[in-house]
Image (cartoon, rainbow, N blue to C red):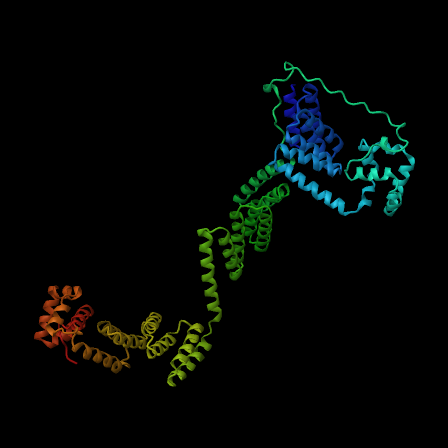
Length: 568
């Protein structure tokens, strides 16, 4: 197999989290292509996944050595240093990588976590540098490892481990100061700098400067290994989470809700930043009727979404789903609250319609809860008493209370219309009369009060029509006198003729009335002209024709226009 084939096998094993197999494949690939920096980088990732940070560091350093301008190599090295607890060094390597690629998100995140670790370690006190792993740190530091060969120094370190306060009495020893600086990641002096240690230390020979490679030996650009690297574990988890989420979606559509919940929970374990996983999970709870869990899951989605600056549409979706859950629980005030929050994030026709529906349902529920016919009757009686005392405003208040307590009783509307008429609130009075009639088409008082209002508005034709309706509803003839009295008042006003304008003669007024399109329509109707002629010749015929509602309406229109006149 070629190096590329071993590499492909290694990537596959890594994706399956079979790290030993992946390491074996990458090692074989390195034997065939020892200058391929990607191979060392991938093997470093495998070692790091096994928490073998020493090996991960070796490969990370080799990656940087082979390709110093590749930012991901610095990420491998820094990750290994972080795992070893060498935070200051990791910090420097992350910063070096970011100089090459300032927008690399993984490097930025690693640097942030490293700085947090350094701050945490610093807050633990200097004595904490002499923890259980101090000798391991000394052994891994080339400048500090020779100190392990000095028994008296080792004994002092053990005393500091046992009692951190002993550090103060040993600070006069320059070796302790150097050791502390090294453990803190600062530049430490080597043992050859200590008095009397020069004889024991071997002189370090300078590394020979490698001869520049000939141009002919330089690898061709086409032959350089591609900067293809395995995705990070976080990226792999996110991709896997999407796959598992899709499985959940399929189960949801098949209404296999328990199975869907299992998939969504697993997806969330893989990627706890994907808000849509939680909103989908909440949808399952909603369909199952577990509204409390639906709300709880949506609230978690909102918190995570705010933290990770998720799309506002996802936040709106979660808020809307909370509103739906509250609506199902008949907690309409809460539903309205969350529908409003959802619309504030993102306005959609669906949520807007649900908000209006919830508001309407809430108003209806409150109205039904307030309904009490007995209390309505008491309020109406109080209104009647105030009306007799001419306290019309007070009576309106009591009649309104009666309507709130029972809006199906036409009497409260009729009585309030009478009050409004007294207060000259004509439009409100007319509206109450129409409501009263719609509730009970046989309620005669409603028609009588409506006719009175129309008379005040000088709508004589309409008034006569309402009086006729009152007569039809008054089957027991108890209100005949009152109805006829209203009709007579209308005819009296109508016989005075149409209202003249300043300086206008009667003939001019009639001529103007004849310009009315409605009057023209009536007068051009052959049937109406025949009826009018019969009425003029035979008064009895007039009474017969007036029984026809359409003919009666046309005649009242002509009377109001002054075209014809009738007696009282």
